[in-house]
Image (cartoon, rainbow, N blue to C red; front, side):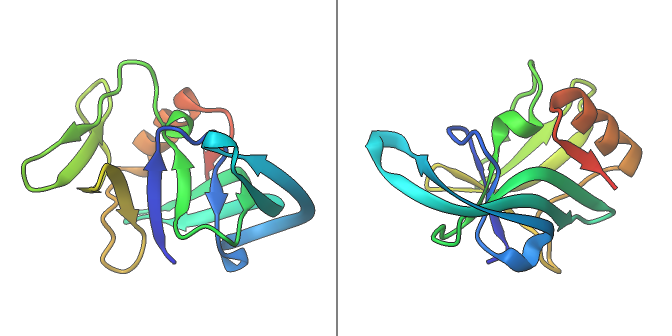
Length: 144
């Protein structure tokens, strides 16, 4: 339930558990996926993700209860010239242009997976660095 996949194909941020939302507006809508398949969103709101040193507030997230994993669009957190680095031990990291670590996690079966529980696989150097990166890279995530 707490697993988050960074998805290069996803545009919206999608979460599968209403308990993750700090505010929520019900609004049923149908989303079209690859190959014409569809899923249903029950509404949208703000999700607060606990990181190692701070909370990440993601706005305009969709509630899609049928998802096996929570999905965050890579486009939502990446900026041009950022590169995901995969390592031999099946881990990955996402550094910024100054080579400061933004986040990391495991790489398995073609998925970049973040875990946001007590043994978090997500690491942020400082809240100020995170805030700067998020404000530069996307308009909807913000740091609280």
